Image (cartoon, rainbow, N blue to C red; front, side, top):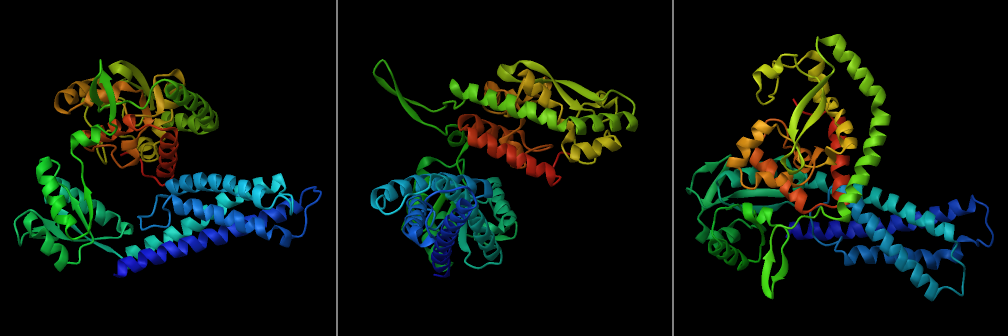
Length: 461
């Protein structure tokens, strides 16, 4: 009951925030318009009707996009993306309504429209970020948390529990596990029963959501668990198996009239490749220009710190499995290649300067040259050494499919914490998801997250 009330409260306060910020943006747009040369701009009370139409159009679009319904808070980037789309649509709607309802009363200065649009995006985003931060803080304190059951106490169940504990702002409180040795404890959470006990467990522990983490279970088993949960009207989430992760898009085609399902489509084709290449050249060229002083200073410090070349050149596997020479600033001793192993935390092969530039990811900056040459892209699967590629292709399903696109300076796996000495199988899942779900916004989002992680020092070893 408390969770439902908190959801309603969050929705109402978010609606009020959007109304206030949209109205404030309109008022500021009017004041800015007065600061520029103008003719025919009347007193503000003449524009009150327009302000009402403007604010109501904005919040109506948000409502239709279910922004005020019970939901987990967006990330800051996704929130901004949502606001931009909704405000643009709301502004266009407001202009149409004003032209139809108020065209004979007062003129709507065009420059004021531009001011109102820009200021609404800025202020509504600011209001939503403050609202989301307060909501995260309350959820982290335990107010309005949602009790959940985890079905499956294996590796996947443990991973889900770990993620929940690492992100208290999600608002989850794990009551325990189902489908294990009753009475035992898994990572501090009790095993409460078997799948057949779900209806009674949901009622006894006031469960609001069930997360199923049984990737190896058959479809029949999953459907049976879902059926048991649906009786009690709880939210149900299912951790997908490997096939479901890879087959993220399903389209219907035909073969001479015979219907077929296409499971593994690739989002990066045709004009999308051209658009991605333009992004690589523009941002890559700008980055090299702006970062050239830092790169020159880094090169000088490397030479002063230890003997050997400034750059480290190593063959990596790129597009279609073809090798290319990847550039990095040297961060290890000159003889480090004699003991070719994975880089680990506190690697003894690092130089003093190398430890710093790897921590800040400065050693990766020369790869902008690879981007301009066309060997790499700004965003994509991180390239591996050919020796390791041969090992992984034999043990990891669809590993070579990640080479259908150019290797990237950063990637979806890396911004989600899978870098350094982490699971290659998990990285592959993220890489394939990225390839099959590419969009220009996804690339921008990954680049922004990479920059923030670099500034906060969340680099490699």
